[in-house]
Figure 1 (cartoon, rainbow, N blue to C red):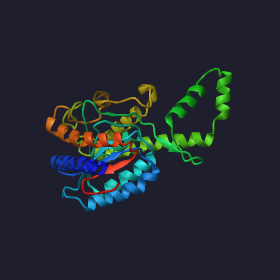
Figure 2 (cartoon, rainbow, N blue to C red):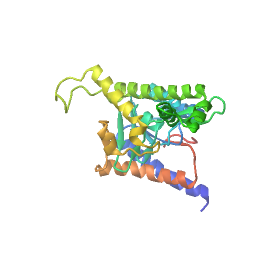
Figure 3 (tube, rainbow, N blue to C red):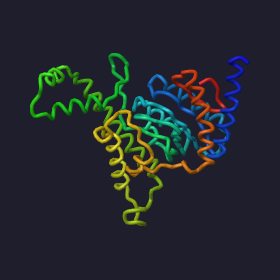
Figure 4 (tube, one colour):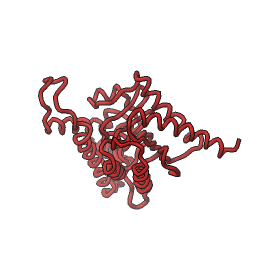
Length: 290
């Protein structure tokens, strides 16, 4: 058997599993693997337009199976704009991991599906430097500067560090942090919390106000961006940690039919990607060559 034959066989199975998940969720399903990078936006835009044009469902709904280490908050905003242009309902499925900007991406969804082995990550947007084009995590830099400035007495190393700071880059990192928090608050209020009409725990049955939705969204955004709380940029935030922040997650750990359909699609897809060391990949059963 040639590699081409093997690939065709693998993708025949993956497409069958994708259709099974679409039928289960009654919406279009796509797989997104890789960084959220400005250079990938047009590819994503064109891909979503083609998925919508070839859609086999009339529910105006899409579910994004997401696997990412994060990336640019600005690009995340653009991608959300594309999804919301073409679909009324947008859900995210995280079978494995979605970190940093991936967490922000998920918070733009109407629903987030995870299980006990899934994780999101703290918010630490990667800011693209104008001189090199590199994506650099913002919050670690900001936190270190704040730590030094807060000291009553600076060491010689601290003085050298402060003198070396590029204020333009620091401002860029602060803007990236603030944008991430603002996006998350906005999307939670408009999408995740849109059906939160009455209180279920505190004052059960009483109406939820717009100010209360905004306050809860701000609380979540600040908690997810608090690196002193999570200790690490790469900290895995599992279901229990996310629920402690009062983020509503659809837990499919014990829903064997749904989790089986999700893993049935995700596992051969990620197995193929990892074996072939694919850096970025988009998949939909009706669309080729992305």
